[in-house]
Image 1: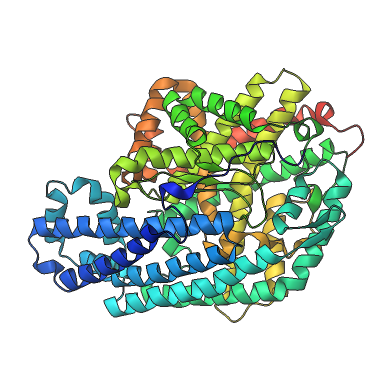
Image 2: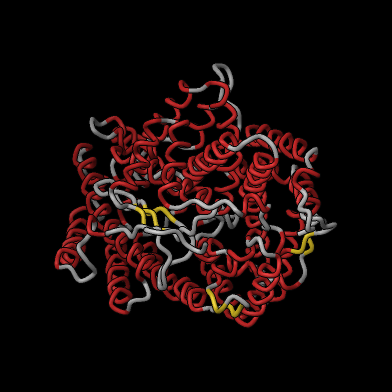
Length: 600
């Protein structure tokens, strides 16, 4: 069954009636005027304002930024759901260009706020009504040493918008246009990657070989795009004084470099767990060594599982109910109010994503649901993001956004809760063992695979400092990072070397991948504690989600601590990976139960 019946399409009318709606163009005009007036009113004089007037400026900035984000969110959702329609593509480009000009007019504000004296800044934070803005103001203050002059910031904003449209847009267009000629017909790159998880081994081999040939024919162009994006990032990093390629991402996550390094070191030290898992999986499939196209092959009983849309809704909401009735109720609104676009179709972006939009509206989920267990997990993941955003909305636009490491922890916990629910409702024996194996594989991918992507990015950015990257070198760096992750039980030949081009985050959001590493490890720790403490901890967890941007990694680790000790993220990861090790050991004793009779 390729698709389930009666899949929903979402209506973006809660944002704007349509891409040519008068209200949309009225907002474009009004936001542009407001940004210009704001600049004329406040540029160069923040330090002279009385403190209440300074808070008023922050509130005015938030109002403009939220209206601009509403427009930008609408453009992103249009591109994701109908981006191939010429009229839609024109509207999206218009919104993006005009919002780029609007944001350029506002660049002075965080710069001047960051330059306020310590005394003025403390006065602002103590002003009645300022508390909701404290996280955003703190983030502005934290990066003040990396901000440039107003003229330089405006120039960078304009250059970034143009170059992003040029290079990231070029990547997206190339990837979207690629067709992979398989035995099952011509298909997109995303569809070919999905065939890597097919139960039929011949389908996996065919898809992998066809995808490798397709990518190889385009790899010079993808390498050109990667070179351009890294070179632009390195120029900006030098101007801002960032001394390592992930430093800007660490600022977004509000993490010190040493915290990120400690987490990744803790995961790297446990890489043999991933190696053991792939040896296990090779045994389950009746192999000594897996080819890379068999790495994601499902066990037969899992491959046979299918969930029609209504059943998927029921299963996810029941799993969420076991975590928190409030989370389940909020997730239910996405189904009831039409906030999910689940129907696969031509012109729709691949994968799945939750679009936060703005607090005065609501999030949307865009995905391509086909009824598999993987689709069910993606639905839970995106619903968790959406629920988090709804809980955080009362903080206002500037304080609602959370650091990615926390956002991905919330989503990863939802996946673990769902997997546990599936295991618990399965009859004991081979089916439950197969679901436990799926849970283990999912954890391995979440933590170790994304750590390997981070290592690939780190190496590529480092080597790019010495000159332009060749496709052959990028391919080798990719293979090296992946071999270290998968170990000797997976055979990675040169045909896998171009698969880096399929990792969109490498092009669109450099170094985002480690957020999944944090998320998977911390979610596993949190899930273990929830099993021990139950509802009281679940209620504190929901309270943490309500904090929005006021909560970061320290708030999460404090939630997992004791009265006298708050553990480090790396210590929590080590404990979580001990649990992964226990699961590996348990499944090592079930090799015969899970082995496929056919050897496939």
